[in-house]
Structures are given as C-alpha cells and as structure tokens.
Amino acid sequence: MALKRIVCPSCGAGSFKHDEEGNLICESCGAKFASPREEIQCHTCGTLNPAQAERCMKCGGRLGRQCPVCGYINPPHADHCEKCATPLDTLSSIVSRMREASDGAVVDRTERLASSKTADSRFLAEQRALIEAEEKARLKRLAEQQSQHQRKQQRLVLVSLIVVGIILAIIVFAIILTSPLP
Image 1: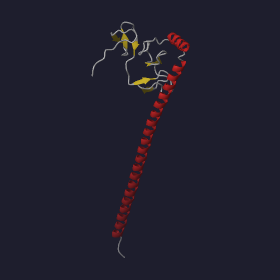
Image 2: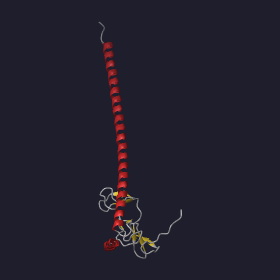
Image 3: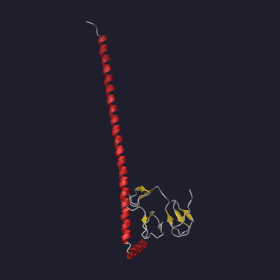
Image 4: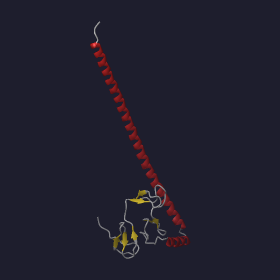
C-alpha cells in the first residue's frame, strides 16, 4: 500500500500539526481538519451516526457543513471545504449562493438536493431493514427461551409429582408394615 502525502486543500501546504483533540492544523494557513472517526456525532441532538451518514438518524439534521459551491459535506468544525477549499463561513455561503442564483445554477442545486434526499432515504430504509431483522431475530430468541423455560418447568413439576408419589407410597407401605395384622 503506497502512502499518499497530505496537502492542505486551502493553501496547498504539506506541513501540519495536531491539536489536543487530534485534529490536523495547517501550519501555513491555520485551517483545521477534523480527525477521522468511525462515527459522527450529530451537533443538534448528540446521536452517534455511522461515518457514511449524511443526515442524523434521530433528528434528520445534516451532519457536517455543506460547501455552498460544490456541495461536499465537510466535518462539522471545518472552516474550508476539503474538496474545493471554499470558505464555509456564513458570508461566503451567502455570496456563493447569490452567484449561483444569478448563474442559473438553482436547478443544479435542486437536483443535488434531490439526489441527496434519495440517498438519505435509501440509507434510512437500509438501516430500518437492518433494525427490523435484528428485532425479528431477538423476538425469535425470546420465544425459544420462553419455550425452553416452560419445558423445564413442566419437567420440574413432573419430577416433583413423582417424588411426592414415591414418598406417599413409602409412607403407606410403612404404615401397612407397622400396623398389627388382624
């Protein structure tokens, strides 16, 4: 496996330092890049979501910050787009959207949003199917456990009845043996 040199998408520099949270900080321009995580925490509700999720599975909020120019979903605390290096602050976002609207790119943005919604719907449907399969397997295990428990109870009652019958038979036999013959 070949190692690939990391460069800052904002300024193109190749020297980085780490902060206390493990994020990469470009030494040239100071752009902050979040460290990769297996799960993304929703900044709205705090739910942990899979790394490939674009929206929170609980509240539906967007995970990360979307670049207003290329639509790339960046980590929540990114200052610049990791794909095209566009600043992600509010003013730059407004200017970019105004430029998009004047260029007639609204249709393109609407299509990107629709495809994103389709991908999100497909992802949520897959997650729902996984959860339903897990729930079905769990209910099946519970039914099997309940059946085993009932069989054990029935065996215990049967053994108890046999033991009580044997004890009664011994008592009756003892009474018969100890009683005088007429």
